[in-house]
Image (spheres, rainbow, N blue to C red):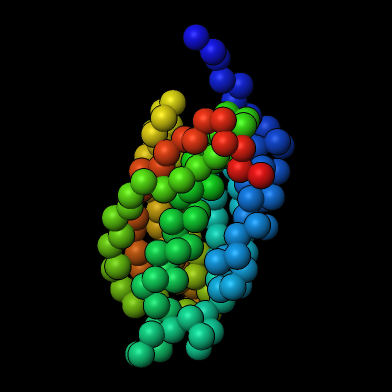
Length: 151
């Protein structure tokens, strides 16, 4: 039996997440920024713009789901062993209110990190005029891809 070496809470785990995020073409395309990486937590934000909207002017649900999926995935990766990568297996998203504001912030939080699967939850808040409103909730299952470095 082999024992995994976890990088939990080390500068190495945050570095791995930041480097992986920098390679995300989808996040670059929508102008997302990685705002925070801590053990079991990640925050990603976007500034809404017309290209990200649906027909009523709100940020499209696909964009909302993309940033919260990514935040949850990187929250999980922050706890995975060195040499492992992350892949989303499934997620459920509840859209609670229109995604409208000056900025949308998606946060992912690890609920349970296992050897092969990791469960996370996510929240998306819309910020406007110094106030935050919850616009979406997510529950997600991630796969720990051992032996497949994220680089």
